[in-house]
Length: 461
Image (cartoon, rainbow, N blue to C red):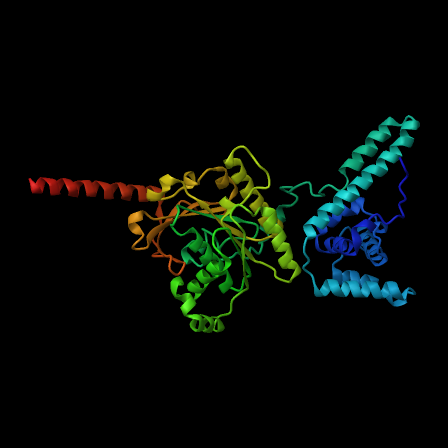
């Protein structure tokens, strides 16, 4: 086995952009930087200005047990740069830090962090193996065991968990949730969604075919735009322009079949509004995986578009990244990957799920009605269901049921009006009903109907 030259820039093969993103990751993610500090050496960098900056960065951490912010790092190196004799190095450092400050958001940082940490851990293990050869030749077997144990453990996450008593203060620090509102005040209320779907959360709407899943998703995206959020809406059944027309209808209240004949009115309406940005992206049915979505988000980030909400219409017709014999397992995997994406990007994701055939005539659609896989219900943070019987379609009457809610109350039912011409769904009043109350009411209605029919028959006799 050849001996490692520790002065060799081991990141050289990854190129300039990749190496710059490594240091960017160190500055922006101190938890990851703590892992890298155990396995990475500044001389791994091929670029001298990155080797210089990381050396200062890690030395500060070794001395003060914390990592400096960018502004503090600049203050630390200011005197060195003023006295630096290497003008080229000084210019490179100033130019790089200037680029970092002007463009703080970069794409594919997750991939860079994963790849570079894995690389450094392998190098640490390789060094340990080489040192073990000498120890074995000197019969120091216990030392070999300790050396290899340490080599395997370095670079692992540094947190051992939440110490219930030592870290008690952390439980009383209020976090800024910054949720995306649904626009339905009763649903966004405190104790239910507490303002809407939060970062890293996965929300799902269940409904039978033709009830209004896609229209509800448009409404969720539109309400986020109203409060200045940037939205990416993925569609796997409709075209990009068809979805765009539904957004036009939502904002202007003009029926979707009249939008194309109302160009001037539609455009003039938008001049009066202050909205976030909207990207609508179409993929073929069954053609997109969660990795497809992730790659598209990375491209948007590189172009300066930072999304605040992802809408996916809908997850059931995505393609899983792994094939199973059973469809239910593939569907569960898709939902798990979507929730991982939500947590990874720090974004709320809304999607929809098809209800089974029996749900089409149900008064209320529950979790048991999720088509093909109940496992989907286990993954999502919030599950809402829309229901309306075929006889109710003409009137637009329906029901919105909070089937699951990890962070608040569930089992609540709201009467709604579903306007599919304008993609608008409204809660009709503030009267909350529980599922048992609805079932009881439904039984009473059936009994009344039977009684009325019986009286009618007896009256005819």
